[in-house]
Image (cartoon, rainbow, N blue to C red; front, side, top):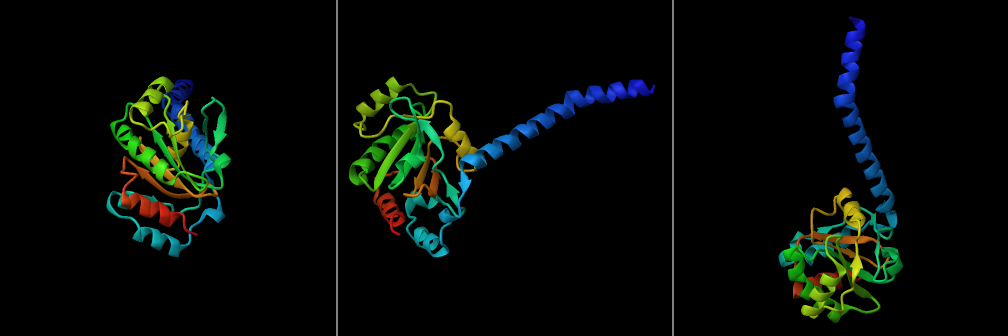
Length: 215
Protein backbone atom coordinates (compact mmCIF):
# COMPACT_ATOMS: atom_id res chain seq x y z
CA UNK A 1 0.00 0.00 0.00
CA UNK A 2 2.79 2.43 0.93
CA UNK A 3 4.59 1.65 -2.31
CA UNK A 4 1.41 2.43 -4.29
CA UNK A 5 1.02 5.77 -2.53
CA UNK A 6 4.65 6.59 -3.20
CA UNK A 7 4.28 5.75 -6.88
CA UNK A 8 1.12 7.88 -7.09
CA UNK A 9 2.91 10.83 -5.48
CA UNK A 10 5.90 10.54 -7.80
CA UNK A 11 3.62 10.28 -10.82
CA UNK A 12 1.80 13.47 -9.89
CA UNK A 13 5.04 15.23 -9.01
CA UNK A 14 6.62 14.63 -12.38
CA UNK A 15 3.40 15.40 -14.25
CA UNK A 16 2.50 18.67 -12.55
CA UNK A 17 4.96 19.96 -9.97
CA UNK A 18 8.25 19.35 -11.76
CA UNK A 19 7.22 21.19 -14.97
CA UNK A 20 6.03 24.12 -12.86
CA UNK A 21 9.37 24.21 -11.04
CA UNK A 22 11.24 24.11 -14.33
CA UNK A 23 9.08 26.93 -15.68
CA UNK A 24 9.71 29.04 -12.60
CA UNK A 25 13.43 28.36 -12.86
CA UNK A 26 13.38 29.47 -16.50
CA UNK A 27 11.71 32.78 -15.71
CA UNK A 28 14.08 33.37 -12.80
CA UNK A 29 17.01 32.72 -15.14
CA UNK A 30 15.52 35.00 -17.82
CA UNK A 31 14.97 37.77 -15.31
CA UNK A 32 18.53 37.41 -14.02
CA UNK A 33 19.87 37.53 -17.57
CA UNK A 34 17.90 40.70 -18.28
CA UNK A 35 19.25 42.24 -15.10
CA UNK A 36 22.81 41.56 -16.30
CA UNK A 37 22.12 43.29 -19.64
CA UNK A 38 19.92 46.15 -18.44
CA UNK A 39 21.81 47.17 -15.34
CA UNK A 40 21.03 49.37 -12.38
CA UNK A 41 23.56 52.20 -12.53
CA UNK A 42 23.29 54.92 -9.93
CA UNK A 43 24.84 57.41 -12.36
CA UNK A 44 21.69 56.97 -14.45
CA UNK A 45 19.28 57.84 -11.66
CA UNK A 46 17.59 61.14 -12.63
CA UNK A 47 17.26 64.04 -10.24
CA UNK A 48 13.65 64.80 -9.17
CA UNK A 49 13.98 68.37 -10.48
CA UNK A 50 14.97 67.06 -13.92
CA UNK A 51 12.00 64.71 -13.99
CA UNK A 52 9.69 67.57 -13.11
CA UNK A 53 11.16 69.65 -15.93
CA UNK A 54 10.69 66.83 -18.46
CA UNK A 55 7.10 66.25 -17.34
CA UNK A 56 6.36 69.88 -18.15
CA UNK A 57 7.66 69.25 -21.70
CA UNK A 58 5.36 66.27 -22.28
CA UNK A 59 2.69 67.54 -24.64
CA UNK A 60 0.12 65.86 -26.87
CA UNK A 61 0.73 62.17 -27.56
CA UNK A 62 4.06 62.48 -25.76
CA UNK A 63 2.22 62.56 -22.45
CA UNK A 64 2.30 58.78 -22.94
CA UNK A 65 6.09 58.81 -22.67
CA UNK A 66 7.19 56.82 -19.66
CA UNK A 67 9.96 58.75 -17.94
CA UNK A 68 12.70 56.58 -16.47
CA UNK A 69 12.52 57.08 -12.73
CA UNK A 70 14.82 54.11 -12.16
CA UNK A 71 18.51 53.98 -13.07
CA UNK A 72 18.38 51.94 -16.29
CA UNK A 73 21.70 51.58 -18.13
CA UNK A 74 21.10 50.17 -21.64
CA UNK A 75 24.59 50.29 -23.11
CA UNK A 76 24.99 46.49 -23.03
CA UNK A 77 22.05 45.80 -25.36
CA UNK A 78 23.25 44.14 -28.56
CA UNK A 79 21.97 44.06 -32.14
CA UNK A 80 23.27 43.33 -35.65
CA UNK A 81 24.87 46.20 -37.52
CA UNK A 82 24.54 46.84 -41.26
CA UNK A 83 27.41 44.44 -42.02
CA UNK A 84 25.96 41.61 -39.93
CA UNK A 85 28.38 42.13 -37.08
CA UNK A 86 27.48 42.56 -33.42
CA UNK A 87 27.11 46.07 -32.05
CA UNK A 88 26.13 47.48 -28.66
CA UNK A 89 24.40 50.71 -27.75
CA UNK A 90 27.55 51.57 -25.80
CA UNK A 91 29.37 51.78 -29.14
CA UNK A 92 27.39 54.98 -29.75
CA UNK A 93 28.11 56.64 -26.42
CA UNK A 94 28.67 60.37 -26.60
CA UNK A 95 25.41 61.18 -28.38
CA UNK A 96 21.75 61.03 -27.50
CA UNK A 97 19.91 58.19 -29.25
CA UNK A 98 16.30 57.65 -30.19
CA UNK A 99 16.19 53.86 -30.57
CA UNK A 100 13.12 52.57 -32.40
CA UNK A 101 12.32 48.85 -32.65
CA UNK A 102 9.99 48.15 -35.55
CA UNK A 103 8.75 45.61 -38.08
CA UNK A 104 7.66 46.07 -41.68
CA UNK A 105 4.48 44.06 -40.99
CA UNK A 106 3.42 46.51 -38.23
CA UNK A 107 1.11 49.38 -39.40
CA UNK A 108 2.02 51.88 -36.64
CA UNK A 109 5.70 51.08 -37.20
CA UNK A 110 5.39 51.81 -40.91
CA UNK A 111 3.43 55.00 -40.27
CA UNK A 112 6.13 56.60 -38.10
CA UNK A 113 9.13 55.75 -40.31
CA UNK A 114 8.82 58.95 -42.44
CA UNK A 115 8.69 61.06 -39.28
CA UNK A 116 11.73 59.28 -37.84
CA UNK A 117 13.60 59.93 -41.09
CA UNK A 118 12.60 63.61 -40.94
CA UNK A 119 13.75 63.79 -37.33
CA UNK A 120 17.13 62.32 -38.29
CA UNK A 121 17.44 64.89 -41.08
CA UNK A 122 16.55 67.70 -38.69
CA UNK A 123 18.57 66.76 -35.60
CA UNK A 124 20.97 64.00 -36.65
CA UNK A 125 24.65 64.73 -36.16
CA UNK A 126 27.44 64.41 -33.61
CA UNK A 127 25.07 64.92 -30.67
CA UNK A 128 21.96 62.99 -31.73
CA UNK A 129 20.94 60.04 -33.91
CA UNK A 130 17.81 58.07 -34.73
CA UNK A 131 18.60 54.35 -34.52
CA UNK A 132 15.98 52.09 -36.13
CA UNK A 133 16.27 48.34 -35.46
CA UNK A 134 13.98 46.02 -37.42
CA UNK A 135 12.76 42.66 -36.12
CA UNK A 136 13.56 39.07 -37.11
CA UNK A 137 10.39 38.69 -39.23
CA UNK A 138 11.24 41.50 -41.64
CA UNK A 139 13.71 40.72 -44.44
CA UNK A 140 16.49 43.16 -45.23
CA UNK A 141 15.41 43.40 -48.87
CA UNK A 142 11.86 44.39 -47.95
CA UNK A 143 13.04 46.83 -45.29
CA UNK A 144 15.50 48.43 -47.71
CA UNK A 145 12.78 48.76 -50.39
CA UNK A 146 10.32 50.22 -47.88
CA UNK A 147 12.81 52.84 -46.68
CA UNK A 148 13.60 53.81 -50.27
CA UNK A 149 9.91 54.09 -51.13
CA UNK A 150 9.36 56.49 -48.22
CA UNK A 151 12.58 58.49 -48.74
CA UNK A 152 13.93 57.21 -45.43
CA UNK A 153 17.31 55.87 -46.58
CA UNK A 154 18.97 58.02 -43.92
CA UNK A 155 17.75 55.52 -41.29
CA UNK A 156 20.12 52.64 -40.48
CA UNK A 157 19.49 48.99 -41.35
CA UNK A 158 20.15 47.66 -37.87
CA UNK A 159 18.59 44.33 -37.02
CA UNK A 160 17.37 42.32 -34.01
CA UNK A 161 17.76 38.85 -35.60
CA UNK A 162 16.69 36.75 -32.63
CA UNK A 163 14.54 39.34 -30.81
CA UNK A 164 16.93 39.28 -27.85
CA UNK A 165 17.08 43.09 -27.77
CA UNK A 166 13.28 43.28 -27.63
CA UNK A 167 12.97 40.43 -25.12
CA UNK A 168 15.40 42.06 -22.71
CA UNK A 169 13.28 45.21 -22.86
CA UNK A 170 10.13 43.18 -22.32
CA UNK A 171 11.54 41.42 -19.26
CA UNK A 172 12.55 44.80 -17.84
CA UNK A 173 8.97 46.06 -18.31
CA UNK A 174 9.92 48.50 -21.08
CA UNK A 175 8.26 46.85 -24.10
CA UNK A 176 4.75 45.55 -24.71
CA UNK A 177 4.87 45.18 -28.48
CA UNK A 178 6.09 47.01 -31.56
CA UNK A 179 6.88 49.75 -32.11
CA UNK A 180 8.78 50.67 -28.97
CA UNK A 181 11.01 53.73 -28.75
CA UNK A 182 13.74 54.54 -26.25
CA UNK A 183 15.29 57.95 -25.69
CA UNK A 184 18.79 57.34 -24.32
CA UNK A 185 21.30 59.92 -23.17
CA UNK A 186 24.95 60.16 -24.19
CA UNK A 187 26.01 57.91 -21.29
CA UNK A 188 23.66 55.07 -22.26
CA UNK A 189 21.08 55.89 -19.59
CA UNK A 190 17.38 55.61 -20.37
CA UNK A 191 15.55 58.94 -20.35
CA UNK A 192 12.10 57.81 -21.49
CA UNK A 193 10.32 55.04 -23.38
CA UNK A 194 7.20 54.89 -25.49
CA UNK A 195 5.12 51.92 -26.58
CA UNK A 196 3.21 52.64 -29.78
CA UNK A 197 3.62 55.01 -32.69
CA UNK A 198 4.13 58.77 -32.52
CA UNK A 199 4.72 61.84 -34.68
CA UNK A 200 8.44 62.07 -34.06
CA UNK A 201 8.94 65.16 -36.23
CA UNK A 202 6.21 67.16 -34.50
CA UNK A 203 6.89 70.33 -32.47
CA UNK A 204 5.99 68.40 -29.30
CA UNK A 205 8.59 65.72 -30.04
CA UNK A 206 11.28 68.24 -30.92
CA UNK A 207 10.64 70.24 -27.75
CA UNK A 208 10.87 67.15 -25.54
CA UNK A 209 14.03 65.84 -27.21
CA UNK A 210 15.74 69.21 -26.92
CA UNK A 211 14.72 69.49 -23.25
CA UNK A 212 16.02 65.97 -22.60
CA UNK A 213 19.35 66.89 -24.17
CA UNK A 214 19.91 69.78 -21.79
CA UNK A 215 22.18 69.05 -18.79
